[in-house]
Image (tube, rainbow, N blue to C red; front, top):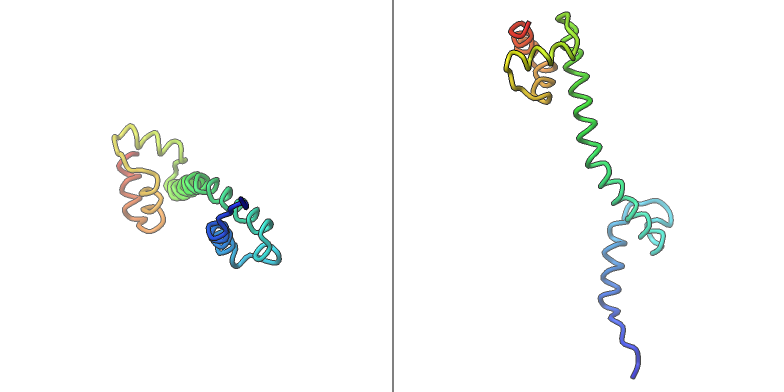
Length: 114
């Protein structure tokens, strides 16, 4: 009995991967093994960077809060300590947005915790 291979499914799997490699440069877009490796490597970066994105944004928020607070004569760590002591539970994302886009509201918070 001859060997049976499901070439329809194999072709579909390869087509799916090649479609994901569309837009890559050189052999990465049209040679199967190179394209497969490039796509899988891209998936690794995407997985890793979904985690890093959260770290990067937190760092950005901290920098923005620090810059906003320095104008009022405090450091970031002092401000966060005073904020916790005053019982204000605003997260860093909101504080950074206030510091950048609504300096008046941010000043009111700083004055309240001082």
